[in-house]
Image (cartoon, rainbow, N blue to C red; front, side):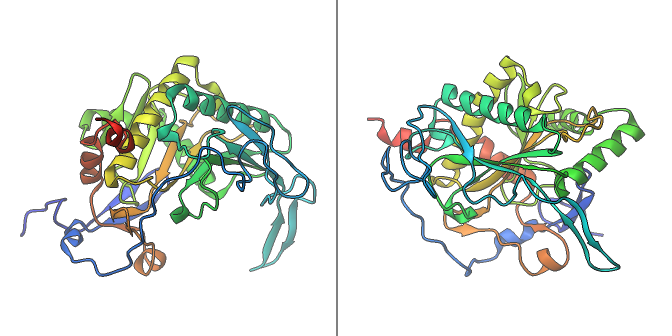
Length: 352
């Protein structure tokens, strides 16, 4: 029998957080690429764009105008996917047709007044203001009786469907717990009942001991390529201490979070020397009033790029019909990111 080599042979890996599998096919990286190639666009923008509806002082939909904000700025989404007023609960339920009305709040959060920046191009102090606003939004919305979960996220780059390059994210607060956090809730609760511990803290301890999937770390945080990662350069960011929600972070944890975000996002940009696209979001304990001590706060980063700034991973065919699949292993991805500089390539280019 041929000896098994995880860097050469197809295998599948189990994700205990989502209770699902991913197929890993590392030998496929040797095949020639003749698929779609995206044109890389230069990331050259002015510090202020009079046509941008997110820049300070500019007009938005209707008669709304942004204030002349100087740091972070949050406002109610002018085209919200959820509405605060309306019916909720079961509307129709039969054998195959089950409908429930849903309510909630959608907000937009500008990270900076500067149109030309992204999180890795901001200072640690500026990113700290973003962290504090994330926490404040989760605390405020999560305290409402009509909110069961607050989802903080960012879509970065046109490749991820972001329609405006101004640095911003979103906060969607649902009456119910969305599907993916709900699945994580079930898995973490079951692990706590069966093992008497916090799943992601135990998992982090094993990852730190192994070391091969760690990308960057500091005294309070660890960024790693999850063993079960689906996207080529997917990362998970975890606190070393038991923390269930963003508002629970201490001042020192928030400061070190701002620092590690700049470091890991700079590595992303440096990988293909482009403003690296991704979807990221925070998962924490729901605000539904139930015990959330089995939870561990964490952030997911899902970037689509695979081979260069112009070649992305597609979820098609087998991925849609069978199960998720990836080519490079999580270990290979972590090694590539770990080897990169923490000086942003655009800053390096300016050095004499």
